[in-house]
Length: 265
Image 1 (tube, rainbow, N blue to C red):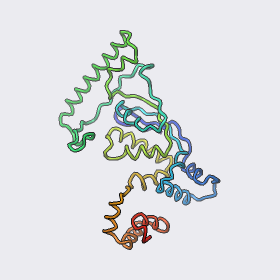
Image 2: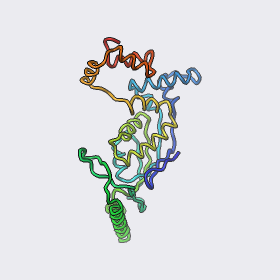
Image 3: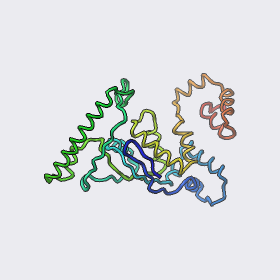
């Protein structure tokens, strides 16, 4: 499975170990094929996710081959729970491949690390970028031709040069990566890679991904102060009615009530 990302990048699934059944198997320990229904498996995975029982998700492992700009890779490698092996500029002559954005974003006014809107002089800025790329790569080649070691010659190359790496990650920590990098405040470029990975993971472990979307990606935790405010605005009866109208029932309904109204539940 491969997804194209940005102008020259990609995410490719090299191999995967386990699936939804592996999560269920680890949680039940004595699980045997055919002893439970798909519905029960889905309910168990959902229970594990919403109660943050994370170790069964670690039984599933993905290995990806990624091609991304260096500045994206450096953000990526901040997630230290993975096993990573990147192409080495000490051993290989790096290719003349650079990321060139389709548009240029402005610096956000209220967030020092974010962007917003577009800069109007896009073509002029892209031309400036291309000149820098060409000059940098010429300098890189010149250093190599003069006998400079590859490990030193690479110093002149800019951060939008493409690199490649293998990335192996268990599903629990992969979900943590996706929760952070799919967020609206994540940089657009790494968010595009996260979207590509999410598509592949969703196809491979659909039950686990549905639970992740429900309880983590689109869920939120509340502080004590926020809970007190909600209790002042709601009654247990009104909240139960609203939850029931959205399809919650039985133990799931009781759990949801206990989060906001533990004494009444």
